[in-house]
Length: 264
Ligand code: KIV
Ligand code: NA
Image 1: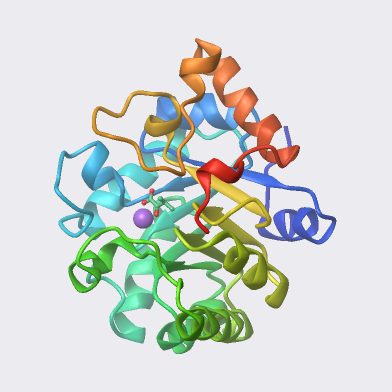
Image 2: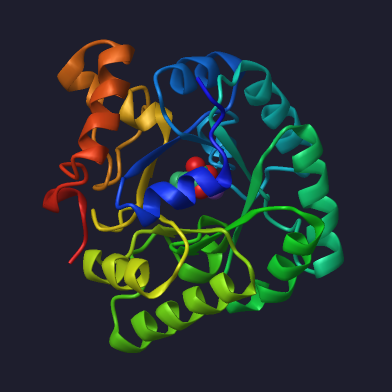
């Protein structure tokens, strides 16, 4: 199959065609998931928790991300590869360019970073360098110590309005995608309508342009309690091929996520 590009995903979103993302951390998952038609793979810093067994994503280093991006790139069969910039690797424009450059040279096609309007200058600088970016907003797990836990964000009117404005600002600055984690479904819809770029959701309702899940969660491999927004496709479908195929079909048909996977 033809390799998926950033403009191809933008065209899908513009045509109202939903797209899928799953996390991948190694060559085997990369090859399986991309081979089944998952359009975008995220080398997420969630690997700190699900692969390394850390308490949070904060301990993950740039070198560790590079290692996993290289592995995923070797297995990839045409998916767009998005690599997380880990905690403490993009605090200044200079540091951001340095980290993003390393991840791109490891085989990523886009980098993802957590924050809001404060990232505008870095996003513009990356765009000038030819580095596509995805800004992760809402529940940003690298800020768990500020939030005091993994909590739904943007529930109050003021916070919701501020998030919409910040999403518009980062898109204007040159962000290619926005990812929303754990926000009320109506806010997920409002941000998707407010910005001209594709929006990917996880616990953000089914009006976003794309959906993402952690692959171990949707394949029922995760040992701890799953968040409300996860659906265990292995439980229903019994084998990984059927499970991943059902995920793709349900995202395209807008039947996943359903109301029970979202927040009011
Ligand atoms: O690291 C990750 O897996 C993520 C997704 C949950 C969006 O950032
Ligand atoms: Na992440």
